[in-house]
Structure formats: structure tokens, C-alpha cells
Length: 311
Image 1 (cartoon, rainbow, N blue to C red):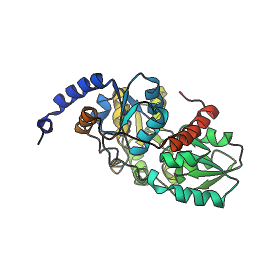
Image 2: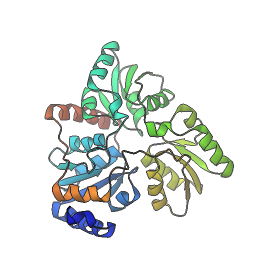
Image 3: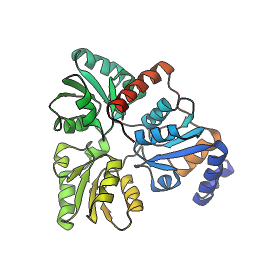
Image 4: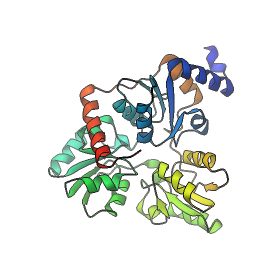
């Protein structure tokens, strides 16, 4: 057994810092990652937001503490950089709910429809779409499409929320985020009884009945800005539990409540300090995407950014 296996967290963090400099690396962490992973990251945020930010840095190595499709997105935008996924087994059930073969068959059923792919999907699915979208810009992307019929993949609940915001016909694929589906209306109502003044903020991957209880339906980065701007002091946060750490760190004077203990993504919690250290030490788990697929996926992302510029 390697002596590295006996390093404590303090020593691991120190060595990660040394390797970060040696490798000229930038460490990214999604808002759903473990608190200790968020705390060592150079940047914490949404997946596409982080990928775009990393592409603008002069880093040679991107260590993306996240799940597979997010690291793929970073590679799509930064093909010249080494992109590492510290926990190689960290996948995404939502992204896995549609395959290229399934999407091709669905496109054949709706030959005139525009295809919008939520970024929570594989590079292959992005490559088959007309345009990608994020949680924050999904409505704007759909509105910018020339077609009236929109095949929206893979998240049906985000698609249903978009349908409430547009007159276009949204054709849904039956995918979902299992983590967000664990939250129940009762969870929110019970907390509201205890904290009647609390503001309810939920993610649009949630069920429609959950969204009906919300004061705001937002992406994770939008949640941060919303809570910072709000005069309220107490919030019920309807998304993966990792987001509460980010909010509490940014606003220690405010109270953030988790409506359900089920709001935990096992895949987002796979990455540990040891994984980040080993990834940097050995350049472990690099992401590779065939160039034809990368270029097609990049085009779908570029179309989105041209239609709806974001930071």
C-alpha cells in the first residue's frame, strides 16, 4: 500500500496545492460536490459556467470535480487542455437516460422538429442536437429556435417547465434527475409550517407540483444571486444538498434549509480529496472525445451562445 493512503485531509490539501502549481492546473467543483471539495476548488458553480471559465484560463490541466458529462463539456470547449475527472465512475443517471440510437429514432418520428439538448447529456447527444441549453437559458433558447415544434431532451421536467413559458410545442423525452424526484410537496409544506416566512427556491428539474410551491424556479447559479439580492433571511432550497454549503459560505448571516434528506446525488458525492490528489499526481482519468463528435457538440454549444449570450 502506498504511503499516500495514510495522508490526512490537511496533508492532502497541502499536496493538492503543490501539484496544482506544478501542473499549472485549475480545479473546478460543481455546486453539488462535497463541502471539502468545494473548499479546495478555484471555482465553484454550474457545469457550463465552469467549463467556459476554465477555457479562458491559461491552465494546462483542468481538474473537474463533477460527473462525466460535465468534464466532457470542459473538453469540448478546451480540446488543447488536459481535462481530468477525479472519480472516473461518477456518471449521471439523467444523461444515461437517452442514447444516440434512441435520439435518432425520436428525430425520425418528428422530422420537422428542432432538437434542443439540455447540457446534462453526453457529448454524443450534444453532437446530434441543433442547439444546447442550460437550466438558466432553456426558455430563451427554445424561443430563439425557428421551428414551432421542439424535441427537448433528456429532462422531461425541465422541458415541462419550459412549456409553461412558451407557446411552442415541446416534445418531451421521458428522462429525469432521480435526486430531484425524491423531493415531495409534503417536505416543503412541513418546513413552511415551521418557517412560514421562508422563501422557497427550487430547481426546474423538479416535479411540476414542487415548482407550484416555489417562490422562484432557478438554476444553481441563479439561486446564489437570487438569495444574495433577496431581503429574506430564510430560504428553503429545493435542489441537491451540496448547494446549501455554497449558499451558507457565501451568506453566513442567512438561513438555508434542506426540505428532504433524499436530496443527495451519489455520483456528485463520489469525488473525495484522495481522488483529486491522485488525479493531479498521476494525471488520472483524462477525458477523450473523438474529434468529429467534439466539433458537432461544440457547434450546438456555439449556437446556444450566439442565440443567448451568457457570462
